Length: 247
Length: 242
Image (cartoon, rainbow over all chains, first blue to last red; front, side, top):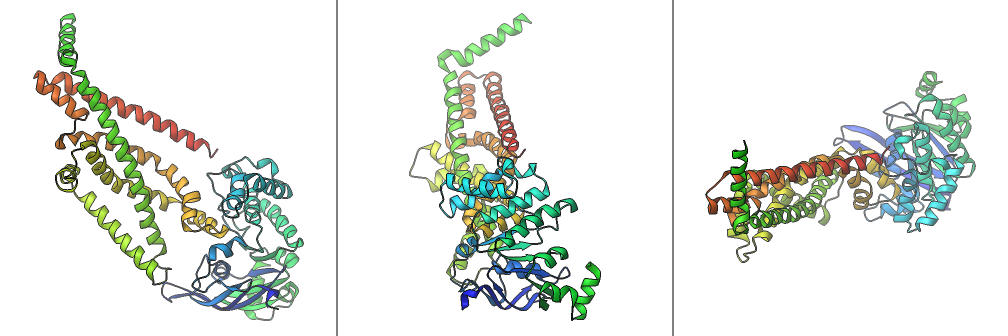
């Protein structure tokens, strides 16, 4: 039943500066299909590093990541093929400023999945429609608000038809009034059964949408459980301390 | 006043019209443009390749596993660094003479030799310009490309280079203009470029003022024209972000 888990990590470690800084200290997690895994923790806890290790944007210094049955940390795995099936959304959107929205969305599908421009456009427009931005298809990223940019960034990842979506603090760089529109898109995505790993400070989102919550500190998982267990009945002192500050 | 003007006209006719000496200027201009064009082409190709090797080495050296790939990159990177040091550390006239009398001895095609030497020379400066441009692009752009599944070179091609190119266009234009003026030393290897053409007329007519001022004015006009053209191109490129 290995297919139950879409991503598994085993003893993931990441050291920076030749071992001086230990960002991850042995993280072992199994992520199920259609699960929304929310990772919370104080800044510097290693939660972003953990997420970036899942698609090897950060190469772990120890341990392994198994994605759909393949050990992607093994030397000869083609990581580029795996990344096509793992969408990623960044804190700072990272849209390509020299392309229109539509081209941002279709670059991957046409160049990597070898779709025709017409098919890619149709798919992109359909997804844009769903996030309510179909009328901005010909705009450039600099003409969009932060919330719009992030929704486009989500669509860009979705256009590759990934099996899992990784979110790296997707609302942290947004003005408060724009957080809602992005979270709404993510909520809808979760309802459609997308597997999601979300690093966030949005406790409300974690509580409402998350199927499982990880609390990380100092590069290790301190506590994990359902949102109810984590937020209503925190066991460890560190989690209690963290929640008392953010709630 | 009228007298001075008549004198000038007489000098003009004597220097350029008689014996169809204007042909030294026009042929020379054509040669200068040809050499500049080919040199720029060679320079940009070298510049992009070397800049990519240098910046990808800097980016990947920490995370690459030891092996053939890493050894190869280290060797390439070393070659590039030596190239940059040598070319930027010696005068272009010396490089031109070495190119003509030492390296390309078997050819008398001075346009070819000059294009190669100026291309290789300018490649070193263009490398640094493009490398600066690549480094000026936010790392998030690179990560976004890689996260979609693009490999290193596709990310460079579709995402980084187009943006870097736009950023470096002004510096690239400066390099082009510097190159155009630098080719004036081509006479050292007997190439009949614009400067040499003017100088030949001076030798024939024993009057320096008219041919040399004409040459200077033509360079000036060329530079002003290209500056204007590049400014236009820049505005076009920038408007795509509004």
